[in-house]
Each structure stands twice: as C-alpha cells, then as structure tokens.
Length: 157
Image (cartoon, rainbow, N blue to C red; front, side):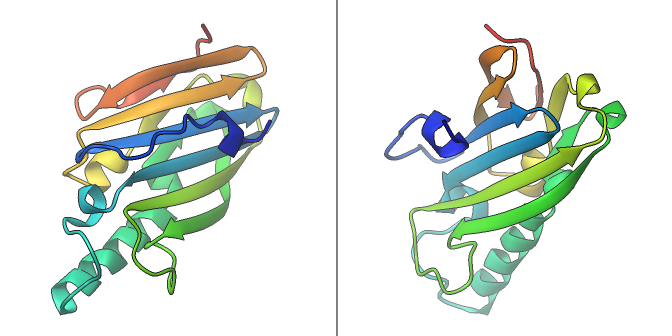
C-alpha cells in the first residue's frame, strides 16, 4: 500500500486545516501534505492580480523547502530527495480547491527517526491544525498538531 492509499479520503477540508500522511519504509520517508487553497494563499479561485500571483509564488517556494516544512530528528540525518507540487502549486495545473505536495526524504540513520516537527505553521500563518497520519515498520499512528504543538512522535497505536 502506497502513501496515497494510506491517506484518509476527505472531500473538503475546512479553512485553517491540513492533512499530512507520512510513510516510513526503512531509510525512505514519503510524505503527502494537502490543504485548502485559501488556507495556504489566502484567496479562492485564480490569482487575479500581481499580489495574488506573488503570494502563490511564495507558497510554491515555501512548499519546495521540504526540510523547512518537515524537520526530522537531526540524528536520523534525513535529506530531501524529491518534491512534487500538486494542484495550484504546480505551474500550469489550473485552479484547484486544494494545494498539495509530495515529499521523499532519505535518511542515513533511520534508527534515530523518532519524530517530526512541522514548519508549515511558520510558512503558512493561516494554518491552524494539521491532522497527521503515519505508518512505520512498527505500526500506525496519528496526531492533531497546532502552532503551539507542532511535533509528532512516531509511537504507533
């Protein structure tokens, strides 16, 4: 089962909320983040002026910075291997209700991989909650993270 299969199928998320699914397979981490367009860029529909186009560009830059958006244990020595922008974050994708991004990280010492701190709250101030679901070789788990509590430990249910 891939990370897309593990993601809960939620049709529409309320403003201020996002979903993050994380799949840890040995030294590889696959993560999928998605949020309502208005939560990440502050407006619905197509960018109508230069300011909105600039805001969308800044959102793209923030999302491409995977190591800033997701900070794993430093001892695990994880580095960003790939970023794939989805929805409006991908150029030429048209207007979507959601913006998403897929990340792939590679870790040199995955045995030290115990938690992740989210930087999405700093990059996107309108973001209030992130529902996290994860799967490791030891099991599954989840958490609801906020600006005041941006860290999830990988302790399976």
